[in-house]
Image 1 (spheres, rainbow, N blue to C red):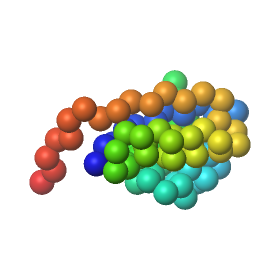
Image 2: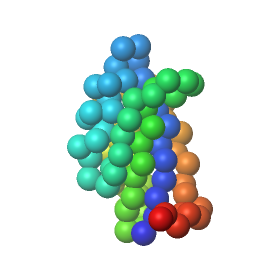
Image 3: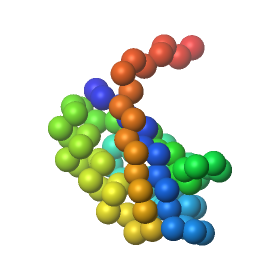
Image 4: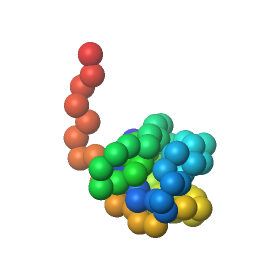
Length: 81
């Protein structure tokens, strides 16, 4: 399993709607609107890198209101208690 965070910039006033739309995409485990240089942060996971790119990331980028994305692959997942 591969994971990534997608940092999203949106059109003004669209962060909450984008987060809600993105949350419904298969492979998205969490989508939250935030403050700072990015408007939405999304955690995604897929079976492999190809699926991550071809299905999850492409689907996210098609959501209306998104102006820019930055995908940050997770290189090492820390153990959780």
